[in-house]
Image (tube, rainbow, N blue to C red; front, side, top):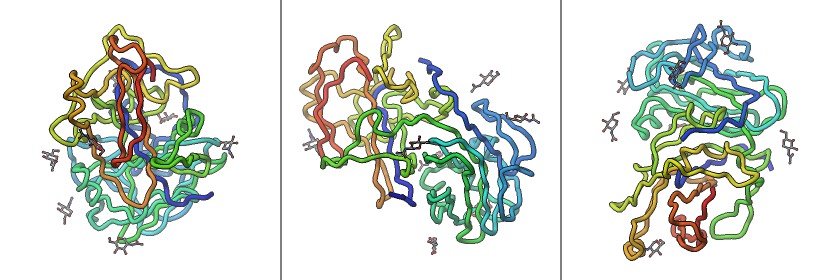
Length: 344
Ligand SMILES: *[C@@H]1O[C@H](CO)[C@@H](O)[C@H](O)[C@H]1NC(C)=O
Ligand SMILES: *[C@@H]1O[C@H](CO)[C@@H](O)[C@H](O)[C@H]1NC(C)=O
Ligand SMILES: *[C@@H]1O[C@H](CO)[C@@H](O)[C@H](O)[C@H]1NC(C)=O
Ligand SMILES: *[C@@H]1O[C@H](CO)[C@@H](O)[C@H](O)[C@H]1NC(C)=O
Ligand SMILES: *[C@@H]1O[C@H](CO)[C@@H](O)[C@H](O)[C@H]1NC(C)=O
Ligand SMILES: *[C@@H]1O[C@H](CO)[C@@H](O)[C@H](O)[C@H]1NC(C)=O
Ligand SMILES: *[C@@H]1O[C@H](CO)[C@@H](O)[C@H](O)[C@H]1NC(C)=O
């Protein structure tokens, strides 16, 4: 099956030190579009310039600095851009395997061209990553002028061709990242089923995913340099997604508690910081039976969403099966009754 529209991916980390190194990406390309020299970002990652880049394949383009210096937007890679008035292709030589492809955009004006008028599509080999994308609308929804789009694709060895196609006046991009990743979403770690049915979903080499939300429940933001070494994911605090006045309790593992990963599960599935904090309901079971702890996520219709919940019991007093039992509903559909034990 060839999927040309990316599936959207919904990550949610329920529960949550320092990350353990167990992954070295074979491909780790950080291209700072429109820049002329190596620059280091806030996460201490070095970005190479794309001026006279070996990754250009075809098409005309120009470079431009961003018109406004916004202190809330990181300088690297957001303050310079490459502008395309006609289709343009980058070609990245990569090894076979799964990659994180992250695209960085800063909604601003470039060469007097206001990005309000920019609409464009981006494809990667057979996959359409973004169709008629508007940085303006996205920045408005996010209430933030810097935008990072993250995709997961599988590629065969050779060249990864990324094509920008303007749908209006022009297309632009500020930074492109292509980083190898371990296979974290295939059936190796359990099968995924469609909620409300028993159909199994296979995430195989022909499936492309887009990250929509990746949250650290009950904890703080985890920046890419604090994720499992080599993966550079951003995990956001979950509090702004809680629906209603009852937001439960943000709890933390005791400092001497050792977080253990089940045998066969790589530590790269999520860092310790994710498992060492949790959002729990209240301390009294009578109250807990009277409310639901609910998160709400805005998503685009027309896509399938992959949801992964991470669990780790952080209370030392809960050490037996069935001491903590609950039901999870997804759009009112019950998933299952589950009891957490002291592992992921
Ligand atoms: C720029 O950074 C890349 C990747 O870290 C490195 O290979 C290259 O030598 C650097 N170039 C210069 C001029 O420092
Ligand atoms: C970046 O590196 C500098 C110097 O090595 C260090 O002081 C700083 O804490 C690092 N920042 C991050 C976000 O890792
Ligand atoms: C998926 O691609 C990898 C190479 O990246 C290959 O080893 C594996 O056999 C492929 N899986 C299938 C089912 O084609
Ligand atoms: C771009 O246009 C929008 C709406 O027309 C305006 O609010 C914004 O200030 C402009 N930005 C720049 C950098 O000119
Ligand atoms: C892109 O969006 C604009 C405005 O929303 C619309 O007018 C245009 O037809 C769309 N183009 C494509 C190719 O979907
Ligand atoms: C948008 O962000 C600014 C600060 O970056 C904040 O002051 C403002 O309240 C936010 N607006 C909304 C609607 O969240
Ligand atoms: C919790 O949500 C489920 C599914 O929507 C609903 O059936 C149930 O009545 C709710 N429970 C409470 C206490 O609100």
